[in-house]
Image (cartoon, rainbow, N blue to C red; front, side, top):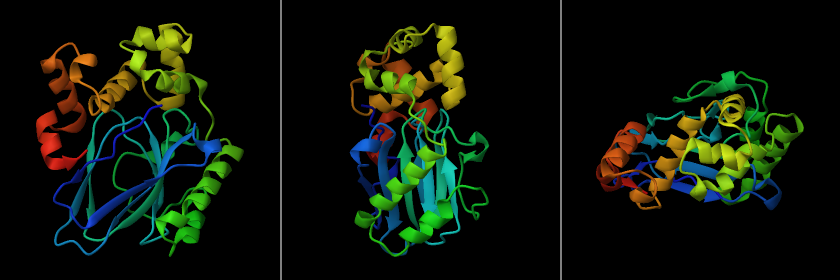
Length: 246
């Protein structure tokens, strides 16, 4: 199954911690993980979080100010978020294609204002407040179940088939064959359910895979790999690994 890598946390950020928890089995086809990102002490300077494109959608809850929440996702390039010197975020990382809520609510930048939508994000954040992360997954799972019941999260058999056989996909044609569709049908289906064209989704998945596989298994040559990696992350592969924990 698809396993996105952790976003970039600088190796020098010793007082910043990141943790993940697996979802319950009945949600494992929808949720990659529940996660927490927080400071253990006030930092001497602002922390810049390097968010990587992974085609996932994240539900973000601010535990310092529970009124602040949102739905976030990136397209094909990374972004840098200034989180300040003290922060505590909790979230839900949904697999590509399962979020079918209002796409206009999705942002690709810093979430710093109170949530004004109709989803029960703030109510859940308030329930989580004061709990340790190990006690949060049941409440986060309840939120996913609410999304399911109201049609905001829906199982996506097309992206599920693609992600389950990701190692067998070398081209958009391979992706379409795996999905049992023509390339034109795949284009229409993916655009509607994920916001990605097949080509853009493949670009993101390849960069994600490059953290765990040799680049020649994914790209024609080193030059193509470095160009694609830099376009997605803003760094060459060597500079990224030198700077961030991966």
